[in-house]
Image (cartoon, rainbow, N blue to C red; front, side):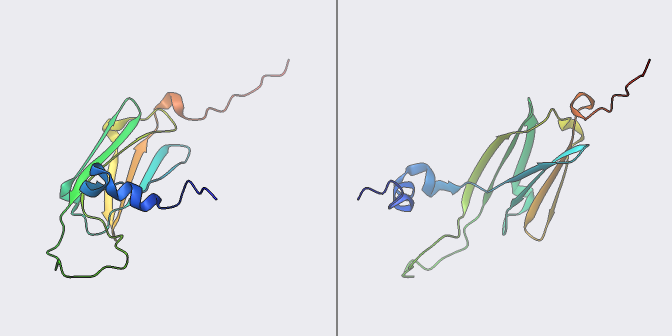
Length: 129
């Protein structure tokens, strides 16, 4: 039986870009005033991370240095990644990137970007005649 997901890890490991870095997972959600993005970046120095917002697209890029590692280790499975990373995601609303705020705590990068006034929900009152 053909299984298209069989050996998927092996396929991506063999690609030149995959071995050079990793792609961080993102949670993107919003409230009435902000779009919030959270991504786990354990072991990454916040000084090595660049964040930008352009045309309502958030880009996060940086690097994580690989600690010195003994080449003789016989890994059964190795999932801890190091190297460079780059992630761009279209945001669900128009935002004001100039007022964005980012904080790094307990290995989690949290970015809060205020929505543009035009993207915020507006209450419309009905006038009865």
